[in-house]
Length: 327
Ligand code: HEC
Ligand code: HEC
Ligand code: HEC
Ligand code: HEC
Ligand code: HEC
Image (cartoon, rainbow, N blue to C red; front, side, top):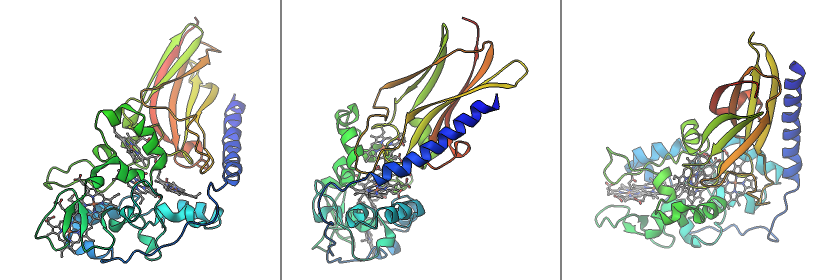
């Protein structure tokens, strides 16, 4: 019954078109472009490299370093006519220039370095850098700035995820963004990973949710629980797609049925809806009627980083096989 798979494929195309329609519906919240400011930088980003080579290499490989040059980001910018407010968080002035509660401003220079060392560490108007502790004799003059180690620092740009986190048990448990995304590094005393792994890291995505399958009478119940993500899953709202795929095979191994259920679809930029993300500790339940038992069902939780990705390119977050019997 390959036509059922074809239906699933057609559905993927509808999804992709839906993505474009949704993007087109975007409306800026505030009137006029965000100001482009130029905070007098005491140092350039490149300066940090000579003395902090290890941290530099971690950052260089991170998505922060690619937040401007990424082809996907540039494609989205073109779609929005290079709106400055849109671009601001992707090549920002230091967070401390306006405080963590205000939106960051777009840098005038060196945009290609994206979210760089200065975005998080520069203290505009001074020769100092923000650090977890004051180090008196260091050439870059690190001074203790508590904000650096708080979730609010990240929340200056990760506004939606910060909101989700704020309402979860992770805030009251004292688990900050840095706890999970910038873990301590054993062989670098006082060091924290600047890799900032996220939705592009397969293992981290897998670690955030669990999936289980059970037959209840004439239904197959698939449960997905967000047990270890510090915020809604998937974290990013606008591009990620999460779906369940069910392929059923008879005793001869022939496919008799293919079905899909979309858990999370795309959301228009700035149409801040979290309706279909799986919240912290929430159990998402999908129920599929058992149609032609006995069959062996292969259940996959699929994750797409961008809606135009084909199903076969999706990350298989979790997979399970279950035999469905006559109830
Ligand atoms: C000329 C060398 C040099 C340059 C350039 C330099 N640093 Fe440093 N930095 C040091 C030294 C030495 C320390 C002392 C602690 C250490 O060895 O890491 C330090 C410490 C720090 C700390 C605090 C470390 C801690 O132990 O908590 C931070 C944060 C920091 N630097 C950030 C920066 C940033 C951001 C830049 C670029 C704007 C920069 N540094 C440029 C040499 C440098
Ligand atoms: C100045 C703005 C800004 C600040 C501050 C900021 N981020 Fe980001 N972050 C971004 C942008 C923009 C991206 C998207 C980069 C991309 O994928 O193109 C991003 C991406 C990420 C990702 C996803 C990486 C991936 O693989 O998908 C993680 C995780 C992350 N940031 C964690 C943090 C943490 C933790 C902090 C606080 C210590 C922080 N960020 C502070 C702007 C910021
Ligand atoms: C308030 C800061 C901010 C603004 C404004 C912003 N972004 Fe982002 N963008 C982020 C952060 C932070 C991420 C990382 C994921 C997350 O935290 O949701 C991101 C992720 C992305 C991604 C996914 C990158 C990847 O590799 O997965 C794209 C594409 C993107 N943004 C494009 C845009 C476009 C287009 C606009 C304007 C409509 C825009 N951004 C406005 C902060 C911002
Ligand atoms: C997204 C924000 C962000 C960016 C970008 C960033 N840092 Fe950090 N950095 C932090 C945070 C948060 C800490 C940890 C503070 C703590 O210990 O609580 C830190 C710690 C450090 C330290 C202390 C030692 C260590 O290994 O953790 C140094 C040195 C440092 N950063 C340098 C840099 C340099 C150099 C760059 C650019 C290559 C950079 N940082 C980019 C947020 C950032
Ligand atoms: C308890 C650990 C934990 C905490 C706390 C946490 N996260 Fe995450 N985060 C995860 C896991 C696991 C993932 C991978 C699953 C996913 O993509 O949603 C993730 C994913 C992300 C992503 C990538 C989202 C995407 O779709 O690409 C960003 C950005 C991010 N987190 C930022 C933050 C920020 C900002 C905070 C603090 C406000 C934070 N996280 C707090 C565990 C955590």
